[in-house]
Amino acid sequence: MAKQNGKHQDSALAQNRKARHDYAVEETYEAGIALTGTEIKSVRDRRVNIKDGYVQIRNGEAIMMNVHISPFAEGNRFNVDPLRNRKLLLHKKEIKKLGEATTTKGVTIIPLKMYLKHGFAKVLIGVAHGKREYDKRQDIKKREQQRQIDRVMKHY
Image (tube, rainbow, N blue to C red; front, side):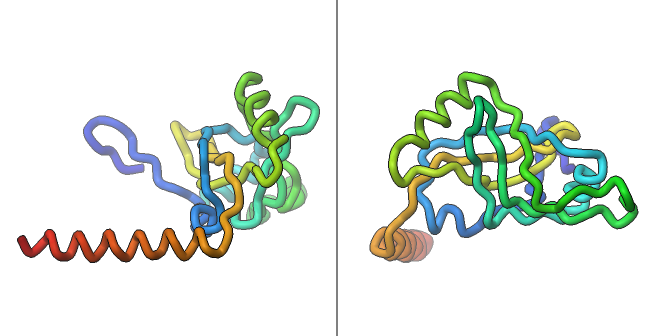
C-alpha cells in the first residue's frame, strides 16, 4: 500500500469496469466480506473476478453471489468452492435499506470494486438499475463533448 499525506491509499484488487457502463449506480456502500483463510490469500494475490457478481438480501443477511475467487495454490484441502456464496458484513440498517431498494422493479445490487483496507477485504457495492442502449449512447456523447471542451480550453 502506498502512503499519501499520512493516510493509506488503498488500491483496488478487482474492479467491475463494465458496471458503470451497463448500470446507473444510485448509491454505494462499503461492506466487509466473510472469507476463509485460503480465500483471503487468493484475494491478496488479486485472483478475484467480480464481473458477473451480484448481491441478494436473504433472511436479513446480504449474500454476494457468483464472485469467483480462485483456489489458493498451496491451499490443498483447505480450499473451498471458488463460486460459493459469501456473506457481506453490513449494519442491520444498511441491509434493511438495501432490501427495500431491491423491491423496486429493475433495481439490483452489484459489486463495483474489491480492495484491502487496514488488512481487511472490503467490497464496494452499488444499488443500480440497468441502462438502456440509448442511455449508454447518450453517456458516450456527453463524455466526447466534455473531452472536446477540455481540449479547446487547454489551448487558451
